[in-house]
Image (cartoon, rainbow, N blue to C red):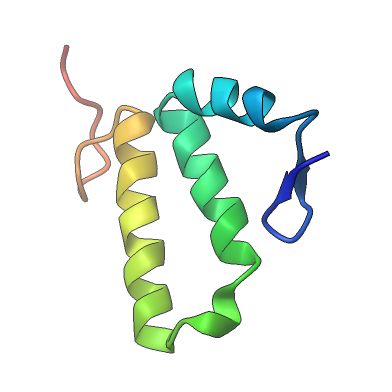
Length: 76
């Protein structure tokens, strides 16, 4: 059974993992990045960690329908 991110996620086989990645949306991509980064924060400097956190925060705001920075909802 293949596992990734320090065995936090396990898949039945490689095809199962490939299937998940092919169907991945922005929400899942962000969640996978968070899981990956939580397991390896000791490999980044404080500045690098801050940059990664800031990027994820911006992506989450966009995913939740917020304009960058000002917290107002985007008009569709």
